[in-house]
Length: 309
Image (cartoon, rainbow, N blue to C red):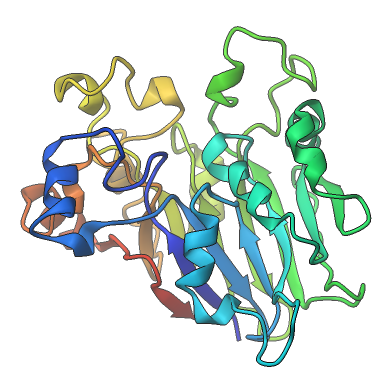
């Protein structure tokens, strides 16, 4: 049995964003607090006891408090059911939460060498002692089985694959610690339970849907997919920024080249948007955009949503 908990569904900054007065953020602060969401991350388990995080958002401490499955076991002075963290990119909203895991419980970080190079280059991550936190490189199109803290197999199989995207924005115009080759900056994951054969896909960032990606996702029982913006020029049109979705390495939900249209007809069992920006009108339950997304078979999740395969 494969269990997935959505720890957070929002893009960087969360909902409401601390300095934003857009319609979604205003509504989330006042009339509809249920719209509030932390930054995107999920937890996955094959046995319901040991869990692996996919990305560690800046809101991780809050997310762990809100998720009983991730609490220390009763009677233990120091314990965590988190066996590891799998990173799909090096953005702040994927790695900053690692700093909240510095209190001594052992776990393993799994990430592409390009992301591990970013962690090594920033000395603040040295707070994660080598004695407790192992850092293991993962490679594109090479499946691996994450281990439990005692070294035994977890029963999960994770296949990382390259996704169209871009490197961390804070490195734009600067030398990347791992060099100029961008392969590995943005990964998708296929996560499977070896015992049951159940599996799902996770893509928190994706700039476009390629034929290769379509072939991977076709017939999948569950897909978590980049839902950052509704339309590519959303931030510009709303006066909230000067970058397009594509400029940030994210596909739009709508449009001929958007996620909804591009992934239609692939017989995907359950389609869930993640990494949804506070500017995205699809967050509002009464909006035309939300209705269009749901009519196309897409779900906008709340923090704490649990899915069992």
